[in-house]
Image 1 (cartoon, helix red, strand yellow):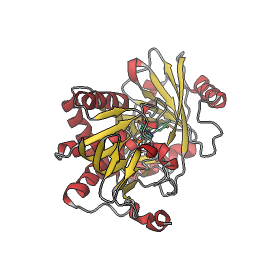
Image 2 (tube, protein in one colour; image 1 turned 30 degrees about the horizontal axis):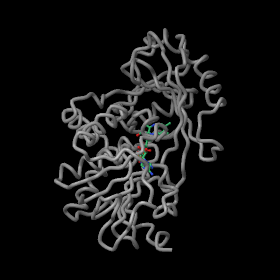
Image 3 (cartoon, helix red, strand yellow; image 1 turned 135 degrees about the vertical axis):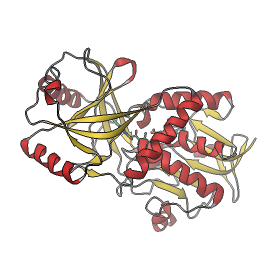
Image 4 (tube, protein in one colour; image 1 turned 45 degrees about the vertical axis):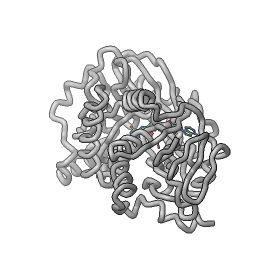
Length: 351
Ligand SMILES: Cc1cc2nc3c(=O)[nH]c(=O)nc-3n(C[C@H](O)[C@H](O)[C@H](O)COP(=O)(O)OP(=O)(O)OC[C@H]3O[C@@H](n4cnc5c(N)ncnc54)[C@H](O)[C@@H]3O)c2cc1C
């Protein structure tokens, strides 16, 4: 079988890139091992336009957020499933200083930050002393629905091999790739955190970041907004809530830890006035890197081996925009944004 692109991984990146390439009329084959602990299967799916204690706008968000909404809405229609919801984050301030900082910033940046005018409404649900700010608009992406529905479509069209990919089974020739009877012009790795051990791209400056979350039933809590106080309580599937997440760059184990569960339940016991029941505890590694910008493009030495990875904790907002850009680079020779082009690491990759 002959294809244009062999894509390794069907997480958020592999899904959105394979969709763009198929739309552009290219032949693709995706290989995915269905790892249930891959980042996309554990993520909360939030697109939050501001970041950090100082609540500054995240990189490119004014373009990424509307683009993501447009793309996910189009995919919903194509796959006939619900994937994206516009929502807001209620930011319960920890301290009076945090409250003042939010108010000052909301006056400077009226785009995403608003003062809450009905704090009292949340008194039956939460214990809080320093007011609430609203971050709006935000998006909430049902990543599970996206991955499952896209996979179904790939299976129907015989465009996916559900198995682990190994470079040992792959022959890299000068102008083609051979893998188990498939001949491809190019191979593109969308293998998430496994990219840090990839023989072609493992030397990039990865900074893998473990995250944990709890899944809980919280009967009576309205499920149309995100609640944040350090951790976030996020509407999830089956009327449950996702509660997370941690960031740990020095983790000893990739698995869920008792210390995370204890810290979160301690916080919930104080903050949340409603009873809750924990139903699951999940963990995964974010494919993050030191400069916090994606890795996109082709290897400087093996020029038919590409990468679409490094989305860190922001795959839901970055991947739609850059999947489209990468596809246009591949099909029409358009430029990649220099900050994401893996060319910036030519020296490291050429060693
Ligand atoms: C706890 C947590 C919370 C998060 N919350 C958010 C959030 O709220 N918003 C947000 O935007 N992002 C969030 N993220 C980050 C988000 O999950 C990532 O940015 C995104 O999943 C990256 O997508 P990806 O496709 O690169 O990697 P992944 O989602 O990890 O997908 C990689 C895919 O490749 C497959 N694969 C890997 N190696 C092989 C192989 N050898 N053979 C076959 N298949 C292979 C895996 O099975 C997987 O399907 C969170 C992450 C974590 C861990």
